[in-house]
Image 1 (cartoon, rainbow, N blue to C red):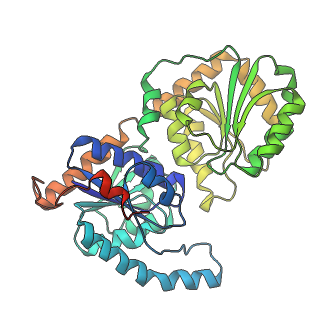
Image 2: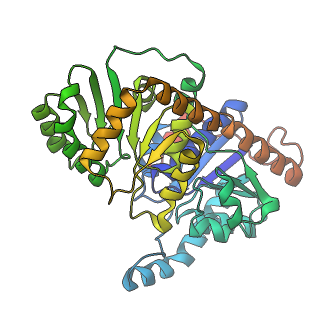
Image 3: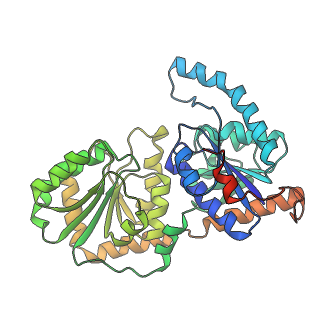
Length: 385
């Protein structure tokens, strides 16, 4: 089975696609995956690092753009569509999956017109514009939150959760072993950091100084605020591992007692898989405020507390951290609630549906009936930036 995964732009769209790709290629030596996105998105760098083929198309966003960018985006649609048709004829996938982001739209629509089985994966509780349009055409819609069903034809929906990369899944089963006796706080605002979140932590640092002997902090700041956050912790005398980017998030989650973070869908899926209590601060400028809608699912389950960035102060953040640090019973209850929401089989179950779509359309995919020879590792690296 050859799967073509379209979309990306951000880690929230891309990493579930990577997780799905890992599941597909792990099932059979002749299975392979091709990713299609843009050279401006995260996928151009991350996909080749994971050993998968990456192809770029020219595509621009339409929603929330100024007039000039809107016109440019509309003008690129035909070019993107014909590029997508060309790639589909080149790779002849058995099924095409859109994971969100504006580059997924033309590719999935082209696949639908070519009568290739199609699906989309919606990570958020509030569906994005591209996926809401595609949901009318595709064969299957994979959603992570029950609330997202309202945006799609219900008969197409599969509530299977958000696929998580294999290194994260290990945290779901292995026992927690603390590196030391200090209370471990993880602060992470996404791959680029979060300025608003960083600012609240800087304000909270002096108020946490009294915990310097019992608190240990790991903080992913992004590039812009790295030095300012380091200075704030140093002035407060707090033990902090401050980094621009955390490469091994699985290890960071494993050691954390409490996570302070944004409320992107992938982040929330990781929190539930890793069974972590959290203080959620949704990105205030997220499209349609979807991060707040995402966060509500964890808050309602008792796994997290949510604070609007405009309402959150350094004093309030410090008070919440101290309260949870001193209330082990409450913290354990939040961890259990988070774990109850975890869906570690999401990638496998989505791959099962994709396989059924292929069987329905093409019959048994034996030998080279549809896909031809699988892509070899050497071919994946050659000619695919």
